[in-house]
Length: 173
Image (cartoon, rainbow, N blue to C red; front, side, top):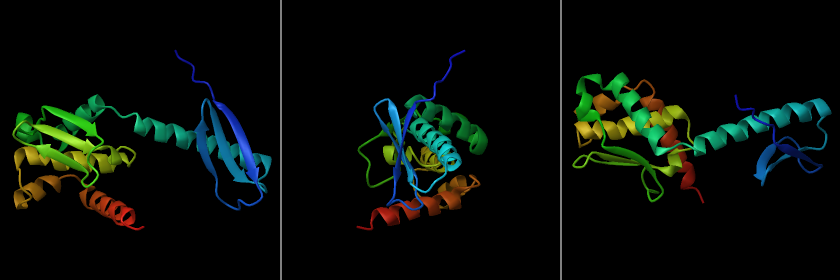
């Protein structure tokens, strides 16, 4: 069994920092920035909390194409079971050249591409974007039949709102 070691942590206190806490990796070290007035107990609590956040973020960024394909298979089983192989993509992959859309699908060759901008979003948002593209393998257009397939995902409206919010804030200079 592999033992995961706690990284070397450097805590930097700031008199200018009032409430916010942040952390980042600096090589093998994790630097945690905290307000100077924090007690040792608060410092310890926030170091643990920020290490967990960094680990979660790094886990999301490490998502692979293989994981994305497995996620697609799970979504087909859950929400598009009667379509079986008609909903199955030939490939699903993360791409870095899609900055104007969250994902794309080419029904002719059954390929799906998901923007890297989605990688660090919550799992339920990734599932929505992926299911949206999977639905295009069955119905290429955005007609009522297509939206009925997408609506099978219970968090579809919430995910669309999330994506609209992200897009709106990205447009703010």
